[in-house]
Length: 484
Image 1 (spheres, rainbow, N blue to C red):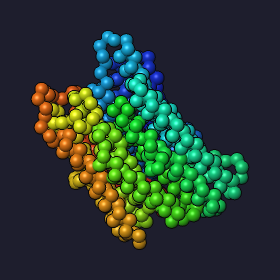
Image 2 (image 1 turned 180 degrees about the horizontal axis):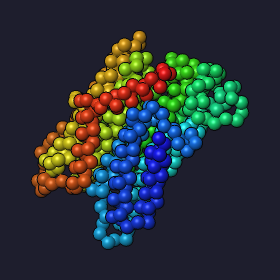
Image 3 (image 1 turned 135 degrees about the vertical axis):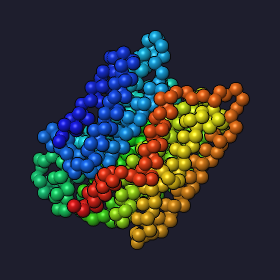
Image 4 (image 1 turned 90 degrees about the vertical axis):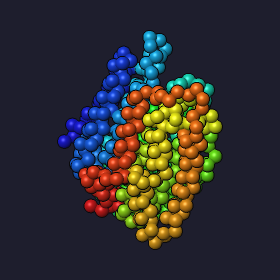
């Protein structure tokens, strides 16, 4: 194969350029077609063990495909949501220009995130994630408000510093490889993984810490998470969904590539301890902040910090089942957080505010998206039968098999505290009586459709993941642990 990688590389990029010039209606339809096609091609890669293209510069293995499926699924769902959320605006030239810029940026953002798991090598991975920063910062500021401009500027400053640290980590990993390959070689994954056992241990440790700190900035790990609440709150809702469900996951993927090399070079103990420290800090701080949020989208932003902490803690456990749970959590979080932001967008469109003190009666005012937002929040809280329940159950099960099983108890306590913050939002904002004068009507059928798709995927992952997907997660976990 390999043609599917080439199509995934070309189509979203070409559609992005086309949206900049094409009529608004055509651009919206092309965006939808590109999202659906990208997801379909990612699914075709699920059974394959390794696929390469472009003379080896593009390469996906099981680990890559897990993240590619998460990115393209949310890409497809977000294009559906965006058609209902970003209205054409009639014949106004300003609205038409906004639509063209928005859909061009949306497709380019999705393209850059899809490229990250498809490129072969640490250097190309850094370039792809740097591109996501530039494009997503422009999308955060696209509404041209003071708050959006400030959030975008803060995001660019912090993310650029983080990526500078990640680049230093990449250079140091390259230096570690010179002891085996000499001074001129490509940072391709198979080459690095095959020779990692001969790399200098101290150099690899330094590279891994810098990679976690650098890419952890984009992932939203504490203490380098401070851009995340502002960007999620001020960005258009479709962009917030992609930031939370896809961009954070892609940044985690970059950390896992360094983890994969480090485990083979120095053993698993040091990488797990580093991830555990960042994970506990992230989960603990997010659990506290969730209880005090008053902005709907900032609430979901801190929920993302929480779940990134869960991923980091899960990778610190030694049991294979925990790693499978982490990878399933990536998929389930993409579906749940995308659906939650879609519901938040519907609420904001209906009531005209993000302030939770002024949001009341969501279920009564929105007969479809209101109840589905409640279900999405319950899914984020790891209640059955949704996918996050299954993934966190696997992570905790692996933690209880670990010699340091007290960490699993801490994980349960902190997740429970976070759940209290989210469920308080549900009861106060969605389940209260609908104010007088609010019509019981949806804002768009496209929004409802996107939420149905997200909840359907979340339920499927929780009740009975397809056999080929389960096999993919197992193979990806073996790759991470250095098992052939």
